[in-house]
Length: 305
Ligand SMILES: Nc1ncnc2c1ncn2[C@@H]1O[C@H](COP(=O)(O)OP(=O)(O)OP(=O)(O)O)[C@@H](O)[C@H]1O
Image 1 (cartoon, protein in one colour):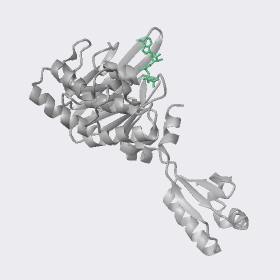
Image 2 (spheres, helix red, strand yellow; image 1 turned 60 degrees about the vertical axis):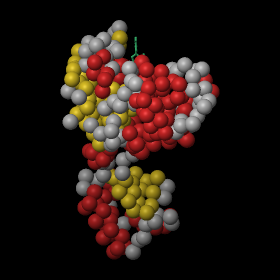
Image 3 (cartoon, helix red, strand yellow; image 1 turned 180 degrees about the vertical axis):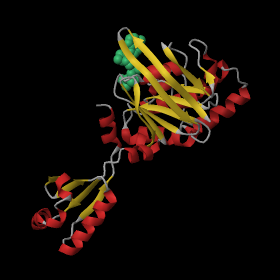
């Protein structure tokens, strides 16, 4: 079942076409990374999904139910963490969650049970400090606790880790990993290492459209560069390798950088076999021979050019 489906979404601010036929599908129980450079339209998309902003065209469905601007009934399935969550700074986290529970009409018993569970999950149990004295990381964690209060099927987080130090980031990512069993998580980010750490699927937004979508494995496979890296620590070995007639054909599509050479080829398995055979015959021994995997960062930069 898909938790979120976005089809042909368009949104213009003045003359600026921010979303230009955006399509995204988010399956249930995934952690979905929503990537794009500054101003790509990530927050705009999230606001449309929450029914807070009117799209010019297109359709958004949460658990198959159509999102209507201004009618936030689909938000009963959704928890939202804005990029800078705001709280009453004079309250303690427990008091704040109690207020959230009261607003949603829960009984005192339900509020108590849910608060305990979420304060435990977010590492804020026993914190007596007022929110005004919280670090950014603590505020983000409390924001997640708040967003999870009504047990949403979908948690949408707008750049939850961008302003955090490595420890704060790790804490937030750990929470997301823990909740994925019950809740699908979508988060926008610029931090590609965070995506590599916890996302199953990603979509990259550029010029108002999805320019890359799928699991990380699928994306890397689709964009596999078919490159082989060979390294010789000794210069004489490198020179012999470069001059060896056995490798001449392969070296036509190659780039040398110091002690390394990168060979590009259409058939990586055949090229690798040829090189191993040639190395055997010539008794040349490289210090490194590997198929290069494309990095997410490299693919991202390519996608948003
Ligand atoms: N209410 C608005 N009125 C006019 N322009 C807007 C409005 N909201 C957003 N924009 C513009 O739309 C574009 C997309 O903004 P949005 O905040 O969705 O991008 P983003 O991908 O979330 O960027 P960031 O990573 O910087 O948060 C930007 O150029 C922004 O200036």
